[in-house]
Length: 301
Image (cartoon, rainbow, N blue to C red; front, side, top):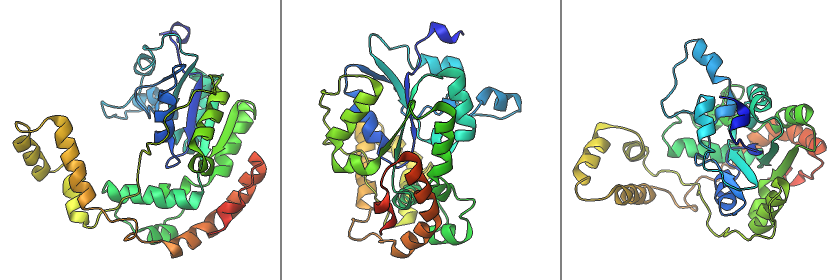
């Protein structure tokens, strides 16, 4: 398929995980002049999937790994001005993502939202605990696996952002801060509207926050609720004739929330924050100069 025969993104939000991208996706989706991929994280531009397939790699059928699959996501475009997608891992995988972006959408506006890397790492870790994907406590990751842990490595923004700016220029790359999203979500999203060239006066409903940092009280119960297992499958089978899919999902969400610690019960991670800051300090200072933003708040715990 020829790239010129289909409408493809003219903007990408390419980073970073745990920096409000789900909320931003919802806010952008409200704007009548914006078309977003119905799949929030396509990850298509993350790697050369065809090359990996040629090497014998197998992919989950749900993955978007061909240009045909990717282009179909944008078949619904009508007269929208801004066409985009949000895949936060494009920043972390910059060494492969940049080549794919240049191949398919070389002129797209590139937007990254950066979060204090200490807070980002803790939020990422809590997500892995919540999804029962982590067997190593955060302190151990920092002390013994800092050079291998994706939770930690994703917070070294300087080289990642520098690579994008060098390959695409300051004019094409825009850096936003999660701090500003938290401070004034309406003004933040209006600045995004300006960047992608749509009416900045449109007011999105930004009252809905997409995610909360919950962690389970009991990890065994959490695994039963969030991971595929015989008990969960049996429960779904028994409930299927009684409840709709939506009601079953709401019931499971209710059980997960019942097994979640309140904010007051959660660990403050004071020691881990100090350890993380010692890892990120130099990177933060370099990033500050690169993007010409005051990041001193990131250096104060």
